[in-house]
Length: 260
Image (cartoon, rainbow, N blue to C red; front, side):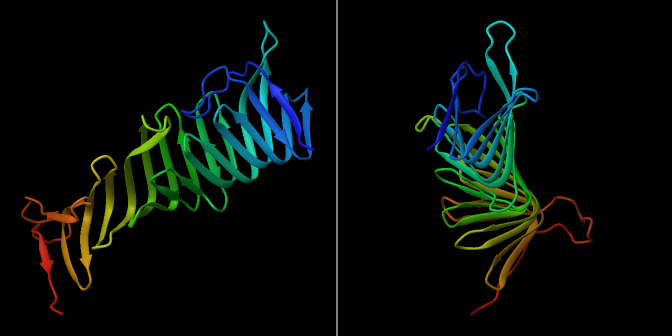
C-alpha cells in the first residue's frame, strides 16, 4: 500500500512549469520519514513528488524544508532524487540516476547514466550532466552531448538549449541550441564539422564556425563559416576577407568534388 503525504501551502516553484502555492504531494511504496531535527522528508522506494502537472520520480526522494514563522506552513527549499530519476513536466521528460532541484535559485541538475531530455520535438542526451536554470529557461548538456530532431543530429562537447513558452501545449519548446567544441551536424544530405555552432529551432537554420567542413561522400567544401537551411537542404559556405588566416591559408572558400 502506498504511503501518502499532502503538504499544503508549499511555496515550491518547479522550473518554469508549476504554479505558485500549489500543494506538493509525495508518495512512496515503502516508507516516508519525517526527520524533524534535520528538517527533512525522505520517501523510499518508487517515490514520487507531484505538484500540479509536474512530477519527480526516484528510488529515494529527500525534501529539505523550513517552517513558516506565522502560519506554520512548510516551505520546501530543495529536493534531491537518487536512483532511476524521472522528471515529467510541460510535455517533456528527463531521466538520470541522480538529481536535485534548488527552489531558491531555480537550478536543477541530473547526473549518472541514461541522461536524457525528451521534448515533443527533440531529444537531448549527455555523458556527464544535464542542468536547467528556470530563471533564464536555459538547459546545458555536458560531455558527448547530442541533440536529435527527426533525421538531423547535432553533437558537441557541450550543448546549450534555450527555451520559450509553447502556446499550444502550455509547456516549453526549444528556441535555440548552441554547440561548443568538436561540433558535428549530421543531416540526410551531408555532415558539417566545426568548433562552434548555433541551431535556430524557429527558423530551422544551423550556423557553424571555426575550421568548417561540409562533407558529402568523398567531396567536401571548407571555409570559415557554414550555414545549413534544414527546411530547403541548402548549404552555404563563406570565406574570410582576410588575405591569410592563422593557419596560413588564403581564407578563400574551397570545394573539392570527386566524380563517381
